Image 1 (cartoon, rainbow, N blue to C red):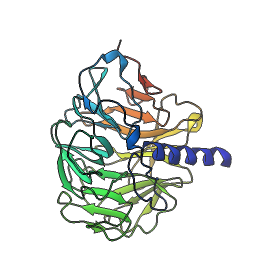
Image 2 (cartoon, helix red, strand yellow):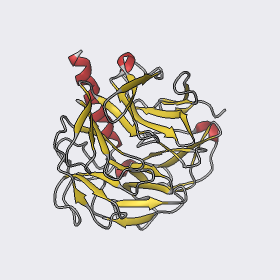
Image 3 (cartoon, helix red, strand yellow):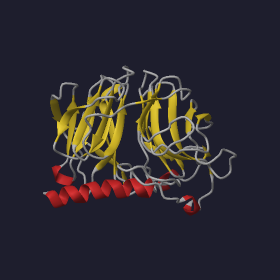
Length: 327
């Protein structure tokens, strides 16, 4: 069992390194950031293409739009969108979006710019309100790439795991802004055990944030100063807040993986999980804001599963980075 857990943790760290496309020093306990920009050999501006051949070289997060009609996942070569059961590329510059997080009025992200644009590398923190057709740089352009970031769906709070000192943040660690990156405050992060894998921000409450590690899930209600464990003893590869304020967490890997709904007191309810491969694990979870029973998950091995009945049945829409339902 310990060997499987060690393999699981190594898989998550390796996936984070592979999908981290920017240069920079890595903070202890945070994924590395090797420079893979030279590997981006595809055209830098996306155009309409044969929808039967949508590929996903990596997946950097997953989120539904406010109306629930679309789901987006970014890679190092731009966005893919799922609408009416079909995956397509999003037209526009192929930025390498990292730390992608959706809110009610658009998405926030970090990462690296398309080489056909004039943005400095890395992007710092950006916002888009038109599904990625254009972006607004909010701060830290040319300074830092946030691989771990989460924004409250309606709260206006954004949390980042800062990997290095910069002009706005003196230290590494967890930071929060409530005014779109103008000012940042640092959380003390007391009570967390293990290396942070994911961050989740409460949809309504600015001071409520959760993190997952290889030791479980930890919840803070004071903007990241102190955390209490709400799930202990197992690695949690994916974490998000549902729109009712409860947490959705993927615990374990392969046949031992479970999908949990957790409230702030730690009470858990298990929901049916997709048929994840033996050595695979869920990496991102998204819930449709218009339908709590509609969810989508991605895995480290680049599968994507979709359900409209709270996990009673799952459809695999992408397998090993290749769309399955576009023919």
